[in-house]
Image (cartoon, rainbow, N blue to C red; front, side, top):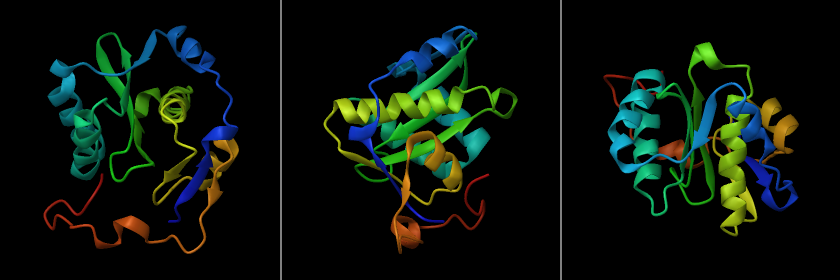
Length: 164
């Protein structure tokens, strides 16, 4: 899977996608301290230990580099950046029953615009699985010769064999 490059300076400063989620009673926001372990457990349960580790890193960054999608006081999605490496977007995940409703795109947009506000010119999606989605949604470009990329030497858990 290739890495992809997103030109943050080309992204419009448009946060209206968060309002669309609000109409569905979904709030996109940054977490608060007491939620950290709940979020990490939720990510681990839904997406595996690897993504939970990256989410832990994003939640420990100052300021935090993670956004949540919350409905009725329950986490239904998350997105992070600066979790694997500086300038990297991801991981991102939405609970299966809430997919295909724009929540993932809203989470990604929140992260990318937050990166842009901090002065990043580009974001990298490491080992992008859904390349057509990133191309269509944010104009991402595949980075030549980028696979296996930064994850090449990642330590593997022989008991769980990676993500779910």
